Length: 82
Image (cartoon, rainbow, N blue to C red; front, side):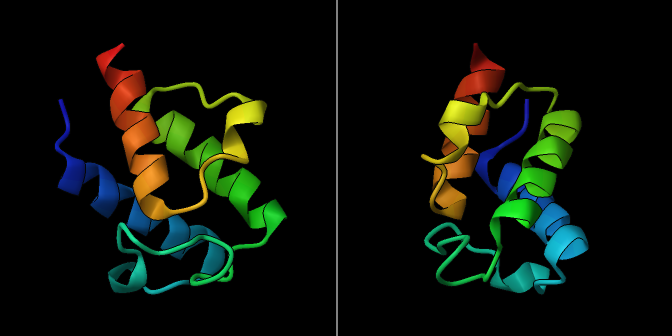
């Protein structure tokens, strides 16, 4: 099972690939929209890639609650732990 830091790091790689944000900038306290300039279309791509990478399902109604990188990491951890 992945650690919090492994999930954050993998998520950072996804954000880098999708939005061109340097992976080092993708930290737990960063807001996807306000700090990382991830728009709604890119966020959908990030979610789809994260679902594939982490083998989890992120329901559409949950995506709006994933405001920060930390929110997304916590959701993925909960989803993996079932």
